[in-house]
Image: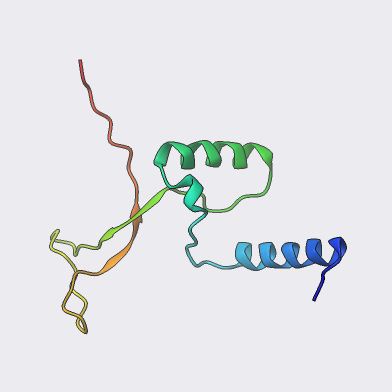
Amino acid sequence: MELTLAEWNEAVEQQAAKIMASEKVKQLSHLFDAPQYAQQFIELARKSGQCRDLRIRAKCELTDSKGNPAINPKTKLPRIGWTEYHHATSSAA
């Protein structure tokens, strides 16, 4: 099935509207997987138009309020999920 340019643009717009209406966390792209690239993208996106909830997150082990790993009851393995990425500033002299 071949799409015309107008049909393809309409499908892209519909998908973008669906994503913007959703509250589910989506990974932007593997191209922006380093924090510095993600930060550059966020700055450009905010300057250029409509954006929502742009934050840098990392996939890692989830912990409870005491800092202990959250364990999945089915697999008995640590749970993995998205957490906020906080830029570590080092004061190297």
